[in-house]
Each structure stands twice: as C-alpha cells, then as structure tokens.
Image 1: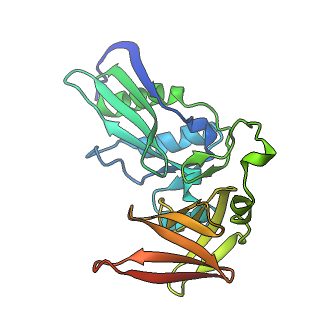
Image 2: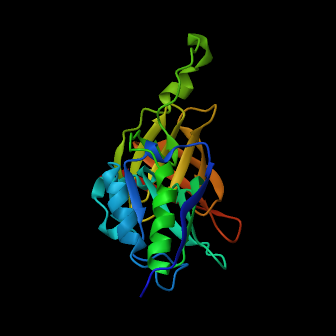
Length: 250
C-alpha cells in the first residue's frame, strides 16, 4: 500500500512529575497495549528503544521477574502506550507509573504520517525522546532512597526511636505468605509482597519502643509491634475485633 504522508513534521508534548524515569533501572512493558486493537508492534519498538537507553525491560507478568525484583517491586516503573488518535493524525501518549500507580512521566507524540503502522511508530519514537538514559537509584515503596542529607541535632532523635529499627531485615513468614522486610530509614520499614506492587504492610515508629503505626495493603490502618524477634500485626476484623498475625524470620 502506498504511504500517504502529509509532512514529516512531528509534534510532541511532555508532562513531567516529581520523580524521573531515569531514576529507574527496570521498566515493565506489557505484552499488549490495551487501547490498541492492533498495536503494530509498538511493544517491541518501545522495548528496543528502552534497552538502547540502558534500561532492563521486564514483561508485564510479575511471576517472570527476577527474585530480587519481586522482593522490591517498587524498583520497577510501568510503561504504557495509549492510543490517542485523532481524525487526521496518529497520536500516542507514552505513560510511566510507579508501583503506587503515580504518574512519573507522560509524553505525547503526534505524527503526520497517515498510515497506521508507520504513523504510530513515528509518534512513539517522538514521545520516547523525552525519556533520559537510565541512571538508577534505589526505590522502596515508590520513593527514591537518595535524598539530600539534613543536619540532625543529636538530641532530636530519641533512644526509643533508634531502638525500633533493631529487628533484623530479611525474609519473614506467617506460615501462609512470605514477605521481605526492607528498612527504609530508622523510622520506617515495609514488608514487601513479591506478588504485588503494593507493600504488604508499611510500619512507622511511634513514641513507644518497638510499637508501630501500620498501613496494610488494603489501605486499613492498625498497629504492630516486635515481640521476641517476631513482627506482629493486629488485623482488624469485620466484627470490630482484632486478630494477631505473627511473622517470624525464616
């Protein structure tokens, strides 16, 4: 089929958010972009371009991810290409979201090439130009662990708060599920679920030694504590009571 090209001019616009795509090493690209009936191989094209920018591209199936990535899925940023076609132009939106579903970058590419396959490919190549080469930092719970250092007076950190971070990192199990304990800082740690992009539980220190405010995977808030080296969470029940869930180190 003869290509119908109006002009070689291609338009691109960008929305940039707080984090940078370049802070990530791993990018998840789905097997098929859902807004296309026929995506014309855009998945393979995006994969090829991202690899050229030094990213490690993973499939959308988390079960195929390496074990170290499953332990902290917030190391992965999720890519999607959205069909934004207008009447006369082939347009795409290249969208990157972190493990909490927060958009990190949206880049729009518009092609004047009328043929679908060539036009969408051209638009994507324009949109992906806004993605910098990978220069990764560690991400935990969707937050970069590299932060500017701030001077802290010795008296501003109480001894109980320091002591709360003493329980060991590593793998813990409640007999049914196995999670990875990841210390974010001296006041916060998470239990990472390898099968989910959202932490199983997030723990924040309180004024009492080894007692924590806990946010669960389903969004509920409760308390947790360290007891004999185990991590204990009080799980809210539908009848208003609480059940004790104990994670022991493996």
